[in-house]
Length: 81
Image (tube, rainbow, N blue to C red):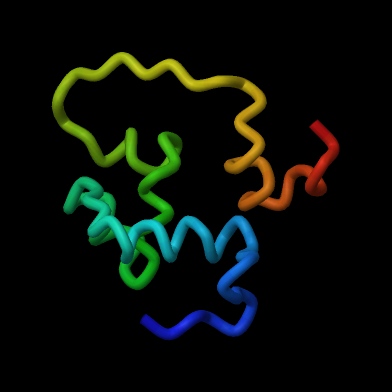
């Protein structure tokens, strides 16, 4: 697998790490969410994007300070939590 421009063998940005993990582990997300996200199905790993696409009743608990999600959404800077 070719490394993206902002990723090398030692370090990847958080965003590239998520994308790489989805490819490496053949990550699966709900098809209805993947269809909404089109070319970026990795976004469905975040509950606020996947939840509205689900039809089965589901109770979700998410840590308020999920650093990975806050970084990807450009809400915080790395190392501020």
